[in-house]
Image 1 (cartoon, rainbow over the protein chains, first blue to last red):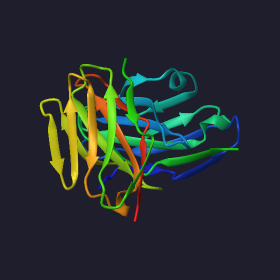
Image 2: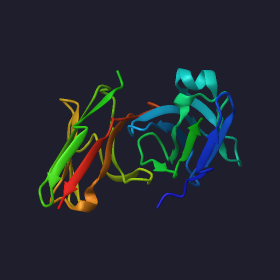
Image 3: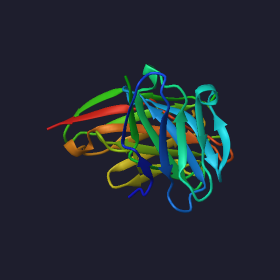
Length: 113
Length: 112
C-alpha cells in the first residue's frame, strides 16, 4: 500500500487565487512526480524532482505554477493565479527511479470557481 | 517523440471472457513498461510491469507482452470479473530519461 500523503484532499478556490497543495513522498524515494488528471481521466505530467532538484517540467508549470521539494519538508505545488481550467485531480507520486513503480498519493481535488 | 498511444479508450466485455489493451510508444530508448489500475475515487496502483529484457510476463490472471521491434506492448486480462472494472493506464519510461509517459487510459467495463 502506498504511503504517499497528500494534503488537502479537497481545495476550493476562486479565479485568481493561489492554490497550494502538499505531498510527502514515500520514505527513501528520491524521485517525485506531479500529475494533473482531468475529468476525462487523462494524465498530464507537470513536473518532477530528484532529491529536491527539478529535472523536468512543462511550460505551463514554468509560468503559472511553482513547486519545490525541500529536504525534510513536504513537497509542494502552488498555482499562483488559479484559472477555471485548473480544476482537476492533482496526483503526487514517488519512486526509487524513473524505471521503477510509482506510488501514488490519494490526490488533491482542486475546484476553481 | 515521447507519446504513448493507448487503445481502446473504452472496452466492454462479458464476465469470464478476456480483455486486451494495447499501447504503442515512440521512444526507442524506453525500457520499463508498467500498467496501473485506477478504481473510481482511488489512486492508480501498479498491477504488473515488464522490462525490455523480457517479451512476456504473467501474474495472477494478467499477461503482458512486449514487442520492442514494433514498439508495442499489451495487457491481457484472462477470465475477467466485475471487480476488474476500472481505468487502466499503460506507461513507458527510459533509464535516465527523467520522464514517465502515460497512455490516455482504457475504461474496462465487465458485465455479469
